[in-house]
Image (cartoon, rainbow, N blue to C red; front, side, top):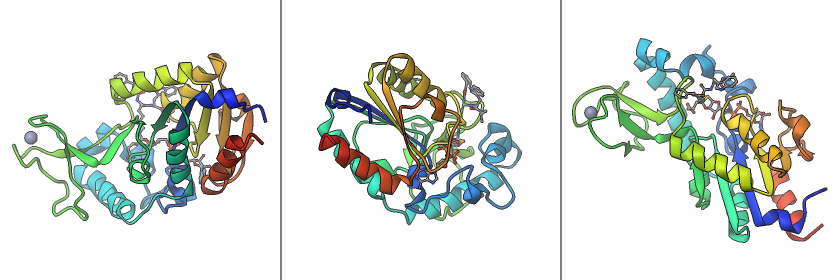
Length: 241
Ligand code: BJW
Ligand code: ZN
């Protein structure tokens, strides 16, 4: 493998739904990715919410219920340990499940928001955390003004939070090593970050049981589940093997 001791001075990890699969969180595009007969692309949109907020909230309420029962797995924990050893470390996640926080990671950049945060559609108050499952009403309404409430996540066609995207972009430009874990790399701009790192000369490692559109540009591929591969890979890197 090309990973050198110097590479682990500056590391970006890009995670997707696959890292939480072994914790029991369904992925979006795998066999378990369908909810009722819907695909993520049909529900995670402003148009879907506008058309049928109750349906969209039923999906989120179902997912919140599932996630509430899930614990971080060995891959989440390995990343928290990695952060302690790497001087310049950023964990860029597309996941909204909060499992990286639970595992103890600190420098987390959430590109697609967080399923436990709510926001008023009128924007009358700052965003707030609400961990109630199941929700007493679907769709829920703003406790201050009574308008519709939405989950503070990023739907298709919506801009990613500027600060998060800029931080992820900068970290990708300067990292020596990018580790890509459990993402289909189908959704942009997150899927462009490996390209940014590659063009800046970083070593790229992919951990995913299946090939993805970015597999051709990586230096090392581990075709194994993250909870197996990630702790082994990290142990190998720190032991210099
Ligand atoms: C395992 C495993 C195990 C299984 N271990 N691995 C450029 C080109 C083409 C299109 C676009 C483009 N730029 C923008 C677009 C449009 C669009 C887009 O990308 N469309 C594509 C689908 C074609 N992007 C957007 O609309 C984005 N917004 C945007 O660009 O705005 C521009 C703008 C600017 C200014 C003003 C206005 C607009 C927004 C994208 C938002 C994505 N949102 C979602 C929902 C979030 C909320 C929620 O959770 O409900 O994010 S969709 C969904 O996909 C979710 C995920 O974060 C995201 C990525 O999915 P992920 O994590 O990769 O999961 P899966 O299921 O796809 O893959 C799992 C992987 O794990 C698989 O590979 C498995 O093999 C693997 N796996 N078990 C390791 N045990
Ligand atoms: Zn309000």
